[in-house]
Amino acid sequence: MRSGPALGHSGLFHEAAFYGSDDEFLAVVVPFLRDGVAAGEPTVSLFGPHNQRLVRSVFGPDSGVEFIDGGRHYLRPASAIRRHRDMLTRYVDAGAVQIRIAGDVPHPGVGVPWEWWARYESAVNEVYDEFPMYGLCPYDTRTAPREILDDVQRTHTHMVGADGHRRPSGMYQPPRQFLTSGVTSWTEPLQSAAPAIELLDPSPARARDAVGALRAVAALSEEEFEGLVVAVSEAVTNAIRHGRAPVHLRGWARGGRAVVTVTDAGPGPANPVAGLMPDREPGGLGLWLMHQLCAYVSLQRGPEGFTVRLVAEDPDGA
Image: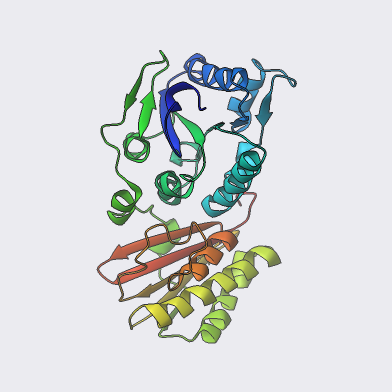
């Protein structure tokens, strides 16, 4: 039997919290983890370095809490979903009736574009719902912008305060509604300049060759750059097979970063979760592969049609 607020609930119980100090953070997280351990449930702390240190200051190494490096886990949404599902499957196979996971998702307040993490926070309501997971996502009001906090309330079914008061989120939107309405894209500084490469209706092979011209300027590792080349080839293939002509490819580069956009005149994939999970709908597997290979992937609908923006960058943030 499940415990706590998720008692009697089926599937994912997705809760968010806002906090404005380290003490408020602990006031939300410590009872969540402590109650999980007391109930004999798998209980996971999945935070970045600062918050993980705070949690470790309360729970010792033999406390029953499993500590996982949140920075490494939350590198890319599609990878985080894969790791999460593997972990949840392992616990359920071992007999768990509820799994508690508390973690902090990246956002602009810590220097990370929000767009695909907003998609993640919404999509998990669907892609984790087959598991008895109780998830807690605390957000620091000192760093998270107002629009991020609004999206948090739209992507979490429940909210909890530092005083322990819980309530349903009156702003919650199911994934298909939230994701279809579109998530505001970030401004890419490189795109303020004229593109270094620009092609109309390229074949995948021609696209791969053209992107190679960005290699010397971007000066990325072989792994990062080849991942971008493969992702661009997949994007162009999708645009040709599943989109509408014309197809435009544009690319920009500076030291440590390369950005490529592929735009076609079609509406984009019908599944708003496309790319975050392996999807056998048209173009779905290609989008998923792009999410595995690139440092960032943006999916946007606009006046020109549907645009995939692919980013490769130096993992050290050059």
